[in-house]
Each structure stands twice: as structure tokens, then as C-alpha cells.
Image (cartoon, rainbow, N blue to C red; front, side, top):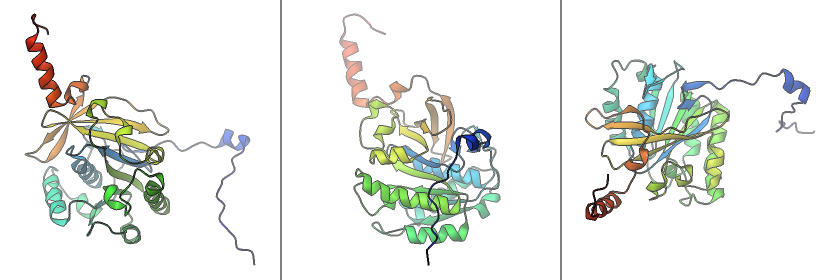
Length: 285
């Protein structure tokens, strides 16, 4: 008996390519979150990446009209938010504080589900697959990449591949849209928002299909975000400013920031520059 194996390739002839209409990109959130893509939100420590992800996911699940000023295009989607970092108590604190910012939290009750991981160096994928199979989410968030792998050294391509292979298999098996929260390497703030600052081997940059970068700034409440990769669609290279409203526990859109470089200068450098300017014989502005 010859075992029938599923074919790996789909053959598309030139004649077929002439008549096949490719599917257009659909957006869950215009500009920010394409449907069916493997996406990463990466940024500096203290940039409120997790809050961004949770506020975004809860907005989608609750059928809000917009997120940070960008229209939410798809309604009725369910969200599974996987926390591997903060634990149950902090996760619930964040959930309740973010929930209070919505006029009504009705759809979200049924469509937003959270998982909180126990332990540090544990293999999550078999159990995660079971939960995805049970809840059948449309959107899966994993916060964060580093705590989802058992190999600590993600500078090695083969270690990154163990993570990306598992995510890709989940995505294809259950038709998911994926949002991974990830970290920057330490330092290099003066380089701005550039994907090369994202920790992990270049395999991760090649794998991701849509990438948003996020940083804290030298202004306490100001965050900056930028889209740095979007496969198959045009994207702006604008830096957007976000206000971190600590009192209401939410991020708010401030708009495009043209002079973003001054907000990522190291405070000590700013002090030294100011000191030099004050010592100049003629006033300089």
C-alpha cells in the first residue's frame, strides 16, 4: 500500500495566474493590524507594550469603532490573550482597569479570554493548542515571545525557528491572526525605531509579516510607535505619538510626530549639550 501524502506545492501556471484574482488584504484595524497576518509588536522596556496589546485586543473583542484613532474594520471577532509574564493578579488588575475605559463592556465578556502561564521554563505549545482548539479565537495574542520559549538564547536562528514554527502551525491549523509582544535589545535609543533593535536572530525579521515598533521617550508620558514592515501592502514610515494616561490606564493617540529625534535623546546627553551651549560666548538658539 502506497501512503498518500499531502502535496507541499501548489502549481500555478502563467495562464492560471492571468485569471486568478488574489485575495485583497483585509484589515482588522486599518493600517495597524492586517487580518490573517503574523504580526509582532516589539519595543523597549517600559513602553507599555503589554497595555497596548491588551487595550487593542479588548477593543477588537468589544466591537469598538476604533483603536487609537484607527478604524476597527472587522466586528464579531473573538480574542485569546496569552500572558506568560505578569501572572494572574496583575493580569486581572490590568483587565479591570482597561475595561473601565469602555462605555459598555458587553461583547468583550464573551469574546475576550485570557490565559496566564505558571512557571518560567515550561513548554507551552501542547496545552496552548488545546486551548485554541477549545475557544477557537480569531485573534491570538502572546505576551511575550521570550517567556514562550524554553531556549533562552534567541540570538540563534534555530532557537527562533522552534518558536516561529509552532506559531505558524497554530496559525495555519486554526486560521488565526497572530500578535506577538516582543522586546528590544538594551540601549541604542538614538537609532530610533528600527527592526534591527528587536532581539532575536534575523530569522524573526524574515518571518514576521507586519511589524510595529514602540519606544518610551525622555518625556514621562510620551510613547512613540512606527510600522517598520508590512508584507504586501504599502505602509507609512510616520512616527506616531501616544500619550500614556496613567490615571485612566490607557494609551491615547497624539498624532504624527515630525521631530521625534529630540524625544529619544538620552537625558544625560541632553544635559551635556545644554551645558556646552551655556558656555558658548554668544547665545545660540
